[in-house]
Length: 482
Image (cartoon, rainbow, N blue to C red; front, side):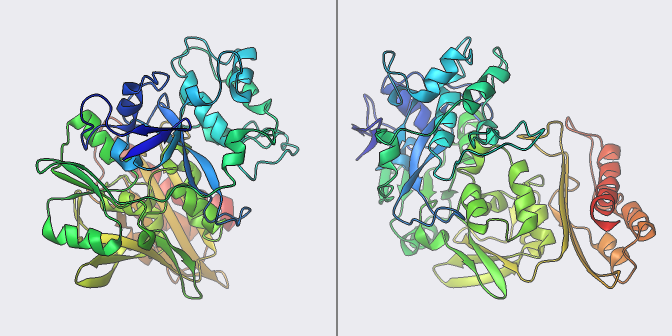
């Protein structure tokens, strides 16, 4: 049992026993790889970023099923046991003081590092983008400060924060990178498959992390242990462990179960596996669901999207989960599975109270089903204090069918205005059957501002939230209705 770290097999047990709750970050630091830093312990700062070899997967430009991709993730969130049998690269594995990696070299010569605390994380996130298979040099559009002429997408660094150097020299380093050398061992590694996720068990009777080999094994375990906590990307679970002291007696890793990782576009619906990461969903759909495509850049950071799953975001039942308003507007349905079989429920019926759902302890979310065809007028507006990588104060998703100038079908999903995500049913009723016009939008916006039960908290006042609801609908008209 072990993890391949910087090309070298390392035992999972280092010194004392690795507990089911030991994070990948703590494990790596125990190995002496102290370039991996803990800044926030909740996936916000990126100081702990490392690269993990993952399957190339569905991609609009890379159809290889045998290759790998270097994927940047936060090491502070997943349990080390979840990486058993996997390959991890830290900043120490990229280069040496006398033979710097191209990313390290550009960061050094362009002044991208000052105190150095955040630098290893930046370097790992930058290196993952450096090795992206479909990164191609091209002329950046005028005024586009987020993409370089070398094909570098600056959003790859959206989850990495710097407090002293400033971002311009870091951006300069990113945009100065060329293509990997053909002899680069990390580039050559991508020609081979990523390691499979095998069955894992770490711990004892009092606390254990278990990765079942099959879905049937996972469901049998849930039937036997209703107290089990499901772990996929660990972007929520890791925060609970790090900051709130969560220590479940049994954590069950389901993120690599093949039965939860399908992506199927059929004539009547799109079925998205609940354990696909958001980045995999984005690449696999390649814009075929425009409302989901609008969501992705606004959902946390690339580091989080590289691990977080739709199933996990829905199962946590957060009233401010970003995917939920979108999936509500799309009239999505969830496939719940247990040892007794499957059942399908409408997402609009799934949430029963604050952080509560219809899911039984012996069930898990297998897939999300989005019906086709798509509504032609769609929009997702997230109101937050920062443009990216922030928690929403209010989120509004709109999907409208407009035929001959009349709104024939309206679906509006809301987040951040009640104890649960919800459909704006009263607003939908005002829109349907009326002309798609400024007058109709104004009437519906007034009703939308009264939907839900918004509260005052540290992110926004109730009055602000109500005002933003109506404004979001007016913005849809200004951008798509005129």
